[in-house]
Length: 475
Image 1 (tube, rainbow, N blue to C red):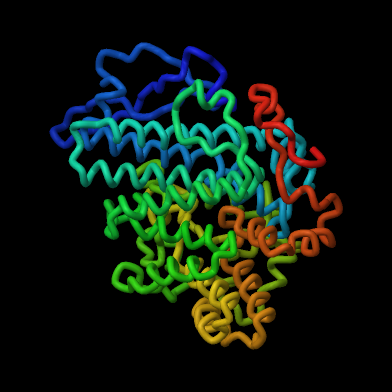
Image 2: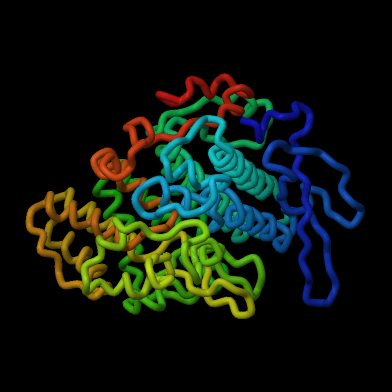
């Protein structure tokens, strides 16, 4: 991969983050930072900076190294709220969003389902993701070698790094299929690393997440829930078990979270679910400033038509029942007197000044729907409907009319469409794993073809590492 093999002798990490200490002086120290998405460059550290090994001897700088990885995830790659992230790209790729931007905007290729191996967004998602995985691995290796950290701090950081590594790989295999699972910063190993099947990647993710759950405490390190805890690892475990059809395990992990009503009292007010203090939040990104809000709001909100980039599709808007309060609470209409468009307004604060919203990656509603689906597959239809109705009732809907197992599973998929629109590609992944993607998209996407449920590996990576071949089918 290009992130690991561009320069055979240059794979050290340059550290560049500053932190202001309480005694009114600034300490410049080394924190995991990669200077570009294309390579790792070794440079001389300024005298005011600590050496890489020293970073992980101090709690403050070790924590800063880990939070810097989260900042990279927030600002670029899969999870960013910018238009280059999967919330926007996969929303356009499926049936959630309509594209209105210019032909120069990279989103148009996703909207038209015309993705080539040379596509810049494909390359950016891949490179940024492995850049961030490198960061997680660097933290894991640095903390493991540390002699200065307390065991509680060491465990916290190990758990976070393992959790982060699993999360990114999990989403990458959902997009690209077979991919490398990278567990080291060693250039000699990584420059020719081979792909593994999605099944193998999932096994690695499960292994990492079980370790993370053992390392991480149940309590949060920070009150804003921007540092993952044990239950964040369990939430991702529950999702992976669901995707791999391990129904008992998915239900077990979901129940462990839902039983902790002290930490996770369910938020039934739709207008509060996406606020930064929501009790339904399991894990979210910190903002880039103390007064900042989400990048999603910057990307999706518009005040006049036609939309500058995207708007919610008629397919999605027409899927809401008249009494569904999510349409009122989480979408906003904009009209020019002739036409009306809707944008996703889960996040409403587009500006700075007061930080009221953070980008939520894991939340309690998903856990209810994971358990509902797992229970349905296990034949516990009563329990499944109880979990499903929890989400429906919160949206202002009555109990489901579904009776049979198949009807309930269909109702759950429908509920997930209306609950998780424009949230990190849930719709794309749900349609894939339920084998509904062809039937759902072929009628509304003229360029759709079965092979497009997997994206191409960037051609530049295939050139650099022949062990990534063959290219995905039909690309």
